[in-house]
Length: 296
Image 1 (cartoon, rainbow, N blue to C red):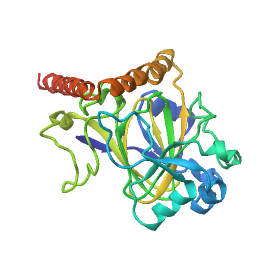
Image 2: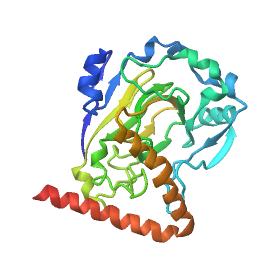
Image 3: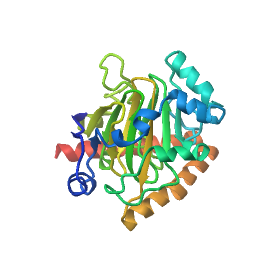
Image 4: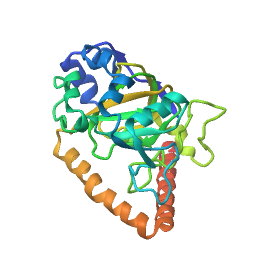
């Protein structure tokens, strides 16, 4: 893989952001955006425990999905307070994914504000919380609705690996899914990573970015960007989503949500192993075509 660091700025003007990052679909870390929010100092484990400690939440483990796994299906359920106690007690791979905390504690929307000067089309009903124990992993994927994402990290550090959407075949996208065939877990550790470059040779051609996010830092992920995340410490993050302005972007996102996902779920229920093998073969074929194209 050919990786470079994500550019970082303390702050940026709307004009510069739109010209250099939003319109060019280039990621950026804005280090001081969230430092203006009450949430920067206010949000911690005790605060969340007091607000929603009794709320039942879905939890996810580090196991990569297989032929039978519907997308975004929880591996178990527990109360939010119990979950916090679990990850603070010892390292845990359990994480909470796409949790709309604000439905249960709506007043905390007063703790931050939307960066409407940087982007339009924010989905204000769905600011989402992502929580993970040290060592938990969000496997490589792109967001199905193809929104632009402003992802702000709190209470800990997180490592993020990013690829533009067009790198999809070099990282072995599963057809009819938003996931990669490859396990990128500990990709940065030459001794312990699970990358199989003999099995996935097109990975060497993939061009992407990497970054470590710290408390209060906001990562702008343009629409369609592939991302793999590993929690270095116990922590949580909030994602603010902005729908693409173009009709084409909106239609592609709608197709992924209501067409592609339903077809894939149906096939996983009716012919899971056959369907998985078909997708695996197509993924490898598309990657080989990328290798051939690069060698010309």
